[in-house]
Image (cartoon, rainbow, N blue to C red; front, side, top):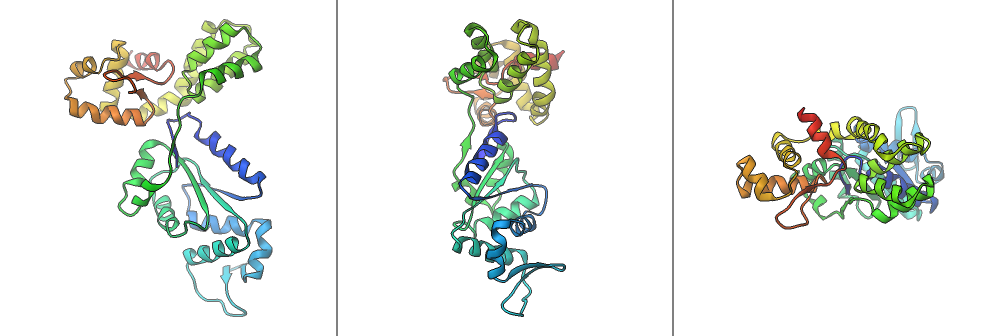
Length: 302
């Protein structure tokens, strides 16, 4: 399970992982979380050229009436879960490996049903899901899906400053002082790193960094921050607004301004941290992790 804030690179990472295993001749199936995942997986497996002969020998075939699994001329009535289980058994016995990926999971009935069935199919296939913190959290806390707590999780962190600097310098061929400033202005946020580099390149590397900032702010606002903001609770927004307004990172100052108890504040602080919005690594202090989010919040308050 891979989680992180919008624009942190979850989809890019999932794509890289998929391509890595495809090059090693794994069967990689990408599923859409807003459709019946069991039916979609069965259909995708049956369309894989490398599996057609294997399924044919196992007497799994597709007819105009749907999927048949039988022995000789007998075709028993089976549900999709049984069909899938037998298909996965056949794939495993053939020595092939299967990776299923689901990008941007949501806490809907299709994901819940698939996850519930998956826990009985572990060791027959591998599953990687990406999603926002709240969606992953809600799935884990479903009373029928608590096994997801045991699933390995990757929480995406900000990109490495030196690696960003090196990448900018290689592509843009501008002075080190300029690429270092650009890297700092992204604060390691994956979407910002891509967008700022593109805007600088699109302006033929001729404009000063300060001249590009309005375009940069607009892109962050339109393609990322507006959506992130809309998903915050009212209390989340109050904390972020106060943090941007004060220009301070002292927890006691934020709590005092909001007249919030330590216990209540801790709940929201921890949640904002898990969402990837604030840094809580320094005791007694918090700070916003997203680049130019102070400017965005002040824009919203105008």
